[in-house]
Length: 427
Image (tube, rainbow, N blue to C red; front, side):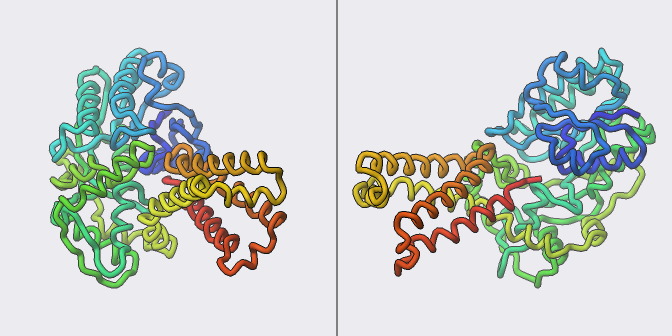
């Protein structure tokens, strides 16, 4: 069967794509940047597209040509520089349903969310709810799946945050530590989608997917800590008010394109817990969180990921401040700063070089804070740092032996920039 997967580069979508390919289906993956996914999953044909720009029926005609099934795994948590919830989760879906009716599509499988929870009027859930209602009334054959917190061998978003919290040293501070959290294995979600595509799960149902174990957020974090092989540590329940500064910063980062699981939408949803249970219409027993983790023992790379996850924003902000300050300081000591260029440039050119390099530093310090520009900014930092070192070595080689080490101290910033590049990818 020909299957089009929306969001096929994501955490859930990529697992579903692999499962459907293994079952012999012809799969096309649609994503905003499938270049890396295409290397990892060459069995798929890939379409590069931005759902926010596919809000009219004609935008879908080419993608739907020859397709039997669409599996929608695409979505976003909150509006930001890289995400438009109304366009992605609602308008694009309404356009898809219109085009699907015209193309004779056999089935739409929608990966949605449990609506009966805290924050049900937030844009994240409201747009999904309207899209689900439109699908149910569209006349198309459909299956809507509402997974609880999805955990698997890899991690993204909330599951990545669980690992990061579990790896904290000494003690684990938690907001909403007692909130119930239902989980579902990533493989079980993929199996449910496969059952729908194969016809083993009849069209029409609206199914919640969550194992029947009773876990709190604290239980789940400590379970991940044991999985990582770390010694026990106390979990400290903190009042929600203490999370507000972190949530505010995460929301600001979201506006700059960083998809933090600490944003206000996630915290609001978590305040009421994630209580999703297996629907009685779906027969297979779902795997527990403990069994899911036990099936894929952790390695040292999992520990590295967990420990670096919360350091990543601190590294990016530190680099931003370093470059902003290095660009601003010369304006407060302009003669001393331009004197370094004056050793090999005439006066006016030395002043111009000082101004140009200062603005370049400031531009890089600002650019690295925006997720779409971060990689180019980090590469620019490396190139400009190397240029500075070469110029300083040529003009004032004695600086390498200076007791304060002005050039030697630049080397750790290069390593920090390389570390930021190494951990920049989110998927």
